[in-house]
Image (tube, rainbow, N blue to C red):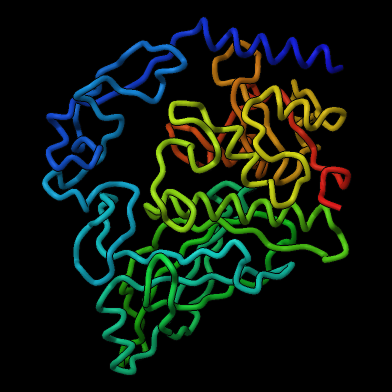
Length: 379
């Protein structure tokens, strides 16, 4: 077994050395404010580069686009929405939309409920609260294993606003919410928007649905493996949340590519991300940096996959070996979240477009999975 894995690892390294990779870059003439985002609609220039250059656009080029205000370096995608300024700070065509304050420990999550804290960015919402108007929220949500036709919406829920302090956000206004009646051991996404009750008893919407919040219900505390899976998902979702909010490192510190997770500056960092997210829970997984090492880590608990039925043994938090090149060999790492009812595999991945993303994959891209067992947990 060890001999096979060594050959697998060496083959993977040699394959990286021989292949060229297509990267998209944008001339910095379209980045007038020098924030490393070209303005929306900028033409891409493709370069064929070696593995070592996959994150290095040539001089005078930047690697990302989507800037909706290219004369202000404080406005660009992947940044925190500034409260009460009536500006689309993150270029998503929304102004002062609600956001979430995420905790990897959850807000008293239970086996059947999720707590959420929704940050208020729209001044009208806060003003109405100070005027003693009744505020309500509506939450839409679904399991990640379901498609949007199964999207559920709560009735209007009366809410309150409170002031909180957060290391990254400082003092801010937020509404604590709770979503009940959920399935245990299950990842969900949710969104919330707010309403005010009019004098005539009708309700007026005063905010749009904010960004998506990914969370997971908890489990029976007597099941250590399931508890570990919950902890892993919440840590992974915390990292995703930080990046979506523009806080792209531990406690919002800046980092380049995957260096925060232990990768070198120009190195692929999908495996480092999975290793980093699980290191507080799984023994001996720290600093594993490639597909071969993770394959070796799971050893007998690694399962090859050729059909969707074989993947249905995987559970949330398991390691996914992914083929993104179409040659049948794993070259990418993900974290298994769910199999959706339309057969899409939902995963959390580092280093996808040089970002942390929740992705939808086809079974043809999944080579295998590493199944978390009690033997992998810290004693």
